[in-house]
Picture (cartoon, rainbow, N blue to C red):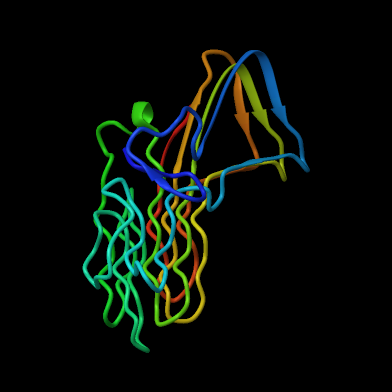
Length: 198
């Protein structure tokens, strides 16, 4: 996969780039005010000089077409497409929504969510990052959260897709809180990510 480090793209990202990976030998409890999140920590949204949202395909170019999962963007006063991953995002009037990916390998590849396309002079939103937690037991209390949501865009840009949450719990698992890989909200909402948990 390609990854955006915050300043540059690389085809060989370092461990944990956009990802939170935790191996816990005992019990993990996410309390009522606890939050583990990688919201909007995935691929970059489009910008004026690279209107397509980022995705596993790469950073994108100045095109209204989809960049794999990344939404297509536009420099005109029309709307861009949203990022896609587990489900498709919403297309704009000009920019195409991204395409889905990762159905067969998301639990091992921990794909990041794709960015929405830029619209006019406004940046597209980031996709969600990835979380993998292995714990002997896991409890998420009411009000607690484990999330890798896509970023939300307003106006002409597209929102980012949700990312990945994978929870491996051989023992006791309880959840009355929120576990979410939702796409970013907005008129051109991002597609949902992918998740697996007991």
